[in-house]
Image 1 (cartoon, one colour):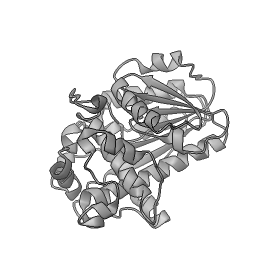
Image 2: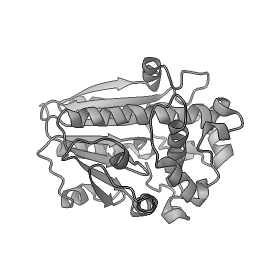
Image 3: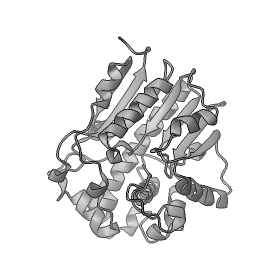
Length: 305
């Protein structure tokens, strides 16, 4: 998610303010993951985003640059979490397009470089929706690297608080064919009503055979994690208070909402994938990751009455 909830835009084409800095945090985590000997995901562009933005130019991009290494809550465990999430959502997207889908929509695309780094089948179109400042910064970096996307890439510069549905239609999105949707690290920041509105729009725009992946937190008091090492280290080391950015009201049951509309859903914890892959974070005391859930949904039919 890179929509600037705080309305602060400073430096790096607006990527240095508010939630935009979290896009750089994820990029730094992906860079660290890329250089690990047991890497879960490869993103050769990530460290270039980090080095180009003034706010993150001195952040680590290799675990060897972190004094405490993997013992560091931010650049060790939290970064590994983002590496795991990247791998799982990479696999989800590729599985969907290999099964025949050819439209991919990245909601709150941020500094996602999947259009450039994944091996897409012929005919794929990647729609990237985010604020103009964020997409412009990404263009600046990838253009300097003379990077070429591996699929047709359609940037849609609009805030998700605007009429992104109309903008998507104007970009030749076809709601009559199956679509792959990804909302990675997005819903934490949205008010409950905005999350429901987003999920409803995805449902309306999705033909049977469409799939969706998104990340949520369990509906509980986030302030219980105020002293979690992940959050305190993030605030201390890079000045981001994630809990101040997260929406704190009761969360809707988006997975259940989709199930009522003809989607099959599966909800898993990040720790489930850590155990399967043998790499990634495992539960700890006072764990800010304990409430995170990854939802995978498949639209099997039109809305059921």
